[in-house]
Length: 346
Image (cartoon, rainbow, N blue to C red; front, side, top):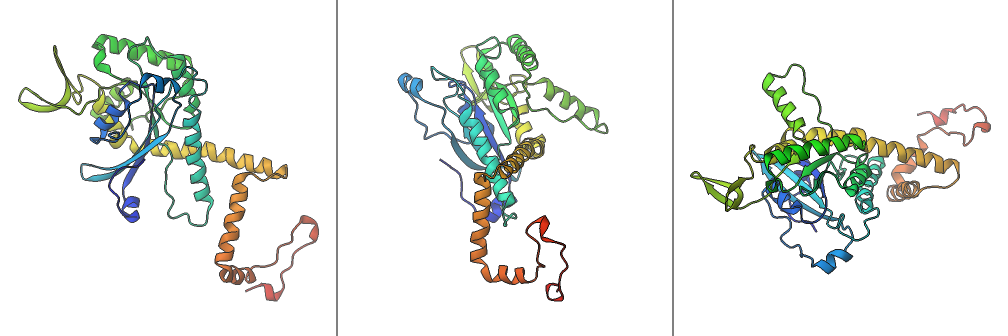
């Protein structure tokens, strides 16, 4: 289901856009954090499942789109939610719906890129996967490791510690260190922030170091407005005090938000295109070549042939005129040398 203001296609193409996936077990506040990050309510129509339904449920893909504005710049945000990850009794390959979805977006982009109308390609490739880690464990669960390893070569994985207000600052520090150690231990490839340019000022370099040290981001979500010291802030009110969502000394919410839609949005998209998509594209071309050698045509080859045929029928006169202007090409290497006649040369 998609939500958001409908606008013209020309306006959409002129807008910045980003495509995110949120993944992790239920109850970690994924929906709340997404709503907090982008000041919207994307999940108001979601049905809450009871215990029996949660046991039986499978991983489902739901897509929602909303148009937001950030300091005068309009942004088209698409969020793909994956409820059900790790909630079933049998979680064998519960990441498959997610990896299949990412591959489907790559395949569609590959088809559009290989088509005749390449000017108006809609980019629905996943630019970032926010993977939520439980604050109640001692680090990564086996399913966390397997899930991130399954998508690490398909999307930019950004690990997030959910509900950081459940932990003390010391506990957050220890959990971050433990998660980073396990990421290295299991060879999980998460999104790597680009190094700061050498000519940047010292303040920018310090911000870059702090951002890298924040991984995994410890975040708190909430859109409740509370008055603190005469100021209205978003946060959570407890008997012992107030946790401010946008207070950098309380959590990494601001760092994560700035990273996603300000400082690193273009790098996330570039890495998706230059690394993850290019890997998929190279593999797809290799598979097509192998299939051609084995005299079996893959689905994409059949689709491509059908597309060309439809366009030829649609623009038959144009293709016939263009064909007459082309020299004759031999069908096989053994058909002899080609010497165009005067009628073949225009």
